[in-house]
Structures are given as structure tokens and as C-alpha cells.
View (cartoon, rainbow, N blue to C red):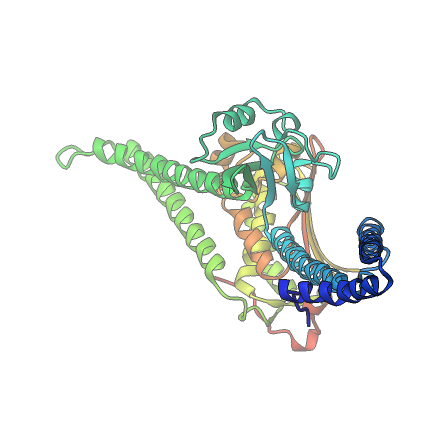
Length: 443
């Protein structure tokens, strides 16, 4: 254990060293000479110990200091203990820094630490991906020079960070980033960047949903209200006019009823649990009922409907939900394909998967619309959809049904050539013919 030498011990050691020299000097008649030689020898010895200490401190080939003698033994030992404590503290600090960085890397947001002059001090890996930074190349660079956006530069130089800043990503124009800046330490700032694209999309979808529902319900209500206001208990309209008004009101009421029914259906599908989707469904029989309905709807359009059905291919799931998914695609193809078109409905086994597709030779869909087709009330051509009686909810319902059955809707289309809507189910969804429940999924 390290012990500190006090003054009394040092004085005692000096007396023990010089008294014998003084006595011997008195005996030989030269006490001052011996005291001088003793002092000079002691000075050389101390300088030698200082040289050993400085050589060890500068070169430090070993963590342990050299062996000391006399009073220098405690000096070397004290330095060793001090260095040991410092190294222990450095290790603790290093571990703390590693834990901080691991925590910063685990944060699902991009984190950047800036100096007050906006130069980059540190950032996590997500910041490199989201903002396109390069490390360590961009260390020490000003962030406002790397993000060349006037709104960002103005926001950072203004210094008022109570409200976050939203910007479109420079790498992806469809991505929206939210910047939050907060003081960090005494001379630094922390910038947290979050991808809020999905939140903005959901907010926009909510606004569109409310606006579209209001519009869709307002139109038939306006028609019905207008005719009712024209009627008077004392003077009813002529029979010809009444028949037209009655038919129009019935048509609009059916449209509202269909819209509300589909909204309830979509709400039920979104809120239902998946444990009921394990019953065997006779899909060929279900498609047979859909074919009958399709032929009835197709009387005016005169399309060529081709049903290519594997009568032995059945899957497990919810019959009612699957009926909605199948029928929505088939009926959409009939409604939105020009008269006299060709529509092929296919239900076949491909690579151990059950595949369903509806292919038409209609006008096709522009690429910018395809990713939004499954949004509620989204229409490529609103005028044509309103003419055909579409509500804009069919593909949204189909999307949720397929999600609940571990599948997804695939859409491919070429303008002027037609479209193909398809989805498939994995092999574990396919059930043997003998265990299929003969259900049509009628509602």
C-alpha cells in the first residue's frame, strides 16, 4: 500500500546519511571535504533518479514505473498509483461514452451534435443514411452548408427552436423530414431528424377521407332534397315527372346505402381479428357465384368474360372477406373497361401458390396513380367513377382483406393496353379438396 513520507522521516534520513560523514571527516581532519563529497554524491544520485523518471514518462515502454530507491521509491509509487487511478477513470469514461453512443445508435431518429457555429461534432449512423452525410469526412463541416435548403439555413440562423422544421428530403422528394433542435451541453446543439412521411400521409388521408365522405353523401342528399322540395301535398307533379323523380331518388338512396355499407364493411375488416380466418373456403364455388353476378352486370357492357378456374384449388380464410376481394376486382374490371372489352379472370396454382388475377384490355392506368389506388375514395377519373357508381372504397377493402390473409395486391398497367390486378396465397393457405367447406361466402 502506498505510504507518504513525512518531513520527520526525510530529516531523519539526512541525519543518518550526513552524521557518519561528519564524524569520519573529524577523525581524518577534513569534515567539510567529506560533507561536500557526500552532498555532491547525493545530488548526482537525485539527478539520476530524475533522469529515470523523465525517461519513463516520455517513453513509457511499460505501464509500471522503474524501481525507486529511498525517497524516490515513494515518488515512483505515488506516480504509479495516480496513473492507475487516471486510467481507471478513463476506462469508466470510455465505457460511459460507448454506452451513450450505443444508446444514440438505438434511437430510431437521426441525431447530430453541433457546435454553436453549426459545425458537426458527432452524428449517429442513421444521420448518415437519412441526410446523406459522410463520416468522418463531414466532421467539422457546417451542417447548413451540407443541407442546401434556404428554409433550413434561415431556421438555424434565427435560433428560435420552439417549433420543429419540416423539409422535403433532398434524396427522396416523397420523404418529409422533421428537424428538432435543442441546446446540448454549454456550447453545443443537438439536432434530431425524424421521418414523418407516413404521419403526413395518414393526416392527408384522414382529411381526404372526411372531405370525400362529405362530398359523396352530400351529392345524393342534394338530389333527394331537391325533388322533395319540388313536391307539394296539394299539387303533386305529373306522373311522368314523378316516375323520373322517384327513380332518381331511389338510385341516389341506393348509392348512399352502398357507400355506408362499404364503409361499415371496411371498418369491420380493419377492426376484426385474424383468428376467424382459418376455415376452409371453396373458392371455385365462390367464383361461380361471382361469375353469375358478373354476367348480370355485364349485359350492357357486352364484355368477353373468360373465367379460368382450377376447381380443385381451395384455401383457408374468411369466405365473406375473400368474396369481397374477388368480386371487387372483377366488378371494377367490368365497370371501368370500355364496352366490348376482354376480361380474363384466373384462379390457378403457380409454384405451389394459389394465384388470382383479373386482366383487362382497357385504357390502362398512369404510373403516378398506381401507388394510390388502394387509398379510400381515390379515383383516377372522378367523373367516370361517379358515372359508373363507384365509391372509391373497393380497392381499399381488397387491400385490407389481403393483408389479413397474409397477401398483398399487385397492380400492373400500361396506358392504352390494359391492366392486371393480382394477388396470391402461400402454400400453407392451400387446403386439400376433401376438407373444403362448401361455402359460397354469400352475404
